[in-house]
Image (tube, rainbow, N blue to C red):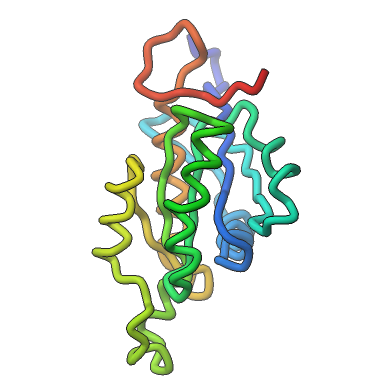
Length: 184
């Protein structure tokens, strides 16, 4: 029931995950410094708790603490880093399955502006849209998104789409096709 003059607010936790220097913090900064931070999905105000994680190996144990009560994981890689792309399946999915089994994953390509960079045009190691989409299917991600923090292209849309995924996660005892991470 909605009270006069009040909106229903749904709180959701989103964790950004991926290799160090793949662009997570830049994407998050562009999103949070934008003029409109409110996200509305089907007239529901979604208040996101955004968690930026350190992807370096020395932070593995600390990073595991950020997973509790997560509704959606935004798993990120950089299109100019084949290593970060490969680590999606060789490192990050195993960590997700160990710490947060069943939590929905949104695979997000970052630094997409580098595909059109004149210096990168001849670089065969730049990850294509089709490669990213295939990786999303391989890991069972519910969505594949692409964005560029430098050009502020696709940032808001990426967080909006991830918020839609998070909104579909309900507390225990309610029907939902998604899970929430609970560490005991």
